Image (cartoon, helix red, strand yellow):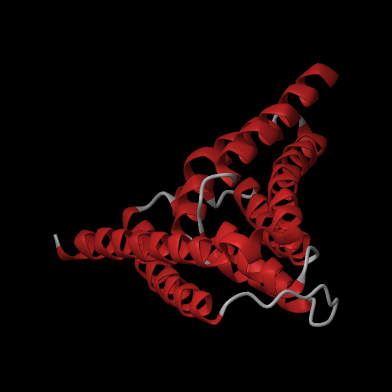
Length: 208
């Protein structure tokens, strides 16, 4: 049993880390918020992200997975999420024109937590990953009981904390001041392209 739990933890961490390093809304928000608020914005974003994922893991354990795999639900998530990602992409492009505002102030720390929650819920890729991959892990973890589910969750969330913590360190130590505009431009354009893809795919489902 112990060996299986260790294997589950390592796989959850490895798969989660491979997904975390792919550019997306969380990375873009981590860069922007860390540049504005300092290092602690990154782990606070992960906290918000983790709270939403804890709720989703619980829901999947209770049988939500089949609903997330239905065509109309996926299409609707794509359209609504695509609209949010488009707004976020435009906001990042506008923000890069203003330049970074570096601050390590602990004030208004609630915003990064809320931001981590919102950007997770508005990302269609996040829902699709959990419906296709995450749900499989949840089923496997449930075979080991509640402890297995907890081991999977903490292995997964620690992968996010490791990656975005590293991003927070790099940005807060000067990376933002050197290539901030390039990062914001690339992130903004990427999110706009992702938004277009999801909106198009969702609309195509309802129109065909």
